[in-house]
Image (cartoon, rainbow, N blue to C red; front, side, top):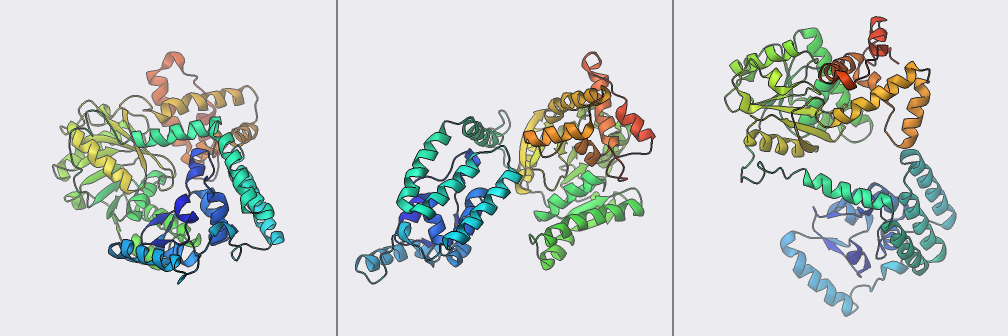
Length: 468
């Protein structure tokens, strides 16, 4: 977008996306981006666009003053040519965006806006320096003029380019895009089959979150529970997830009603006869999961993908009582499932490439980052996470303060500490996950009794509002 900001005018289609995403790479916008955007849309909106890396569509860009006209795609080039001639012949104003000042707030007000932006950055990303550098560069241009801002932008950009943060975030950028390429699967020319209806078994914290993520992306969802009390609680959780978006201004009441209408609660498998995918999200109990998958094989159509949200259990064990091993796959979401972007797609040696391709497509549609992993204890994330939590439990049993541990971890940059996370997911999940590691890696597992003892004491985490 740097080039178009430097032009004398900008013309866009209604759906074009305009933004400055450089902060996602540990950089700041270059080529005058930090100086021209505030002069085109105002300081507050410019900071929002740069610091969040969120683009705006053409219509909003026109309302903001970022673009001067909106036309249909077939009229874009011809309209641009006409504008060029009009500007050249002075029938339209010859505007140098670097010297515009009508959108800039007065210096005192501007500094208050910048001060607030710095406070927000320090609160939300205390260990990142480049967002603060971006604010400093914007301030230089406002206080000392656009040309001075350009020099500071160029100098700061070069410094950030060599930083470890930049190198790491660039690696993350390419690594995330690499997840869509799975040797032996995505290189076979397979097209994802259409998934029109999804069933979710279990309306607890994870099941309701998964159902929320699906209906938010337009998938009709059947939510199954064992009795009406649990079913109504599950539906209530989904509604609460959506109401939270309404309260935050991310969803209108009309959109809420339309979205929640995609959810249907059931107590049996009769409605599973035309589903394309089932995601099981019950407690981590092998016998229960085995029975569910045996039932699914009886009721679901032959093409239906049978997925489990298990975080640690061997999928071969889950599907042991079925004959449909080629369509059994792991769909491991992370709590809260409608918020967290990662989705582990777990494949066994018998999972068909078609099932993987289908789940990859669903993952992308519900705005997740799907990562295909192997079928082993803990898969990828929990294989790393479990030793981390073991270390935290060991420290507590040796006298460390749980609050201090969580504070240190949060200050380091994690969204929350290990004990706050255990409270969030529930002690039942923690014990079930830990048991799998104890069974599979007895020689290198520290068997802490802290969580089981707390559970015996009637504590179960957020479910009962009694936890660590």
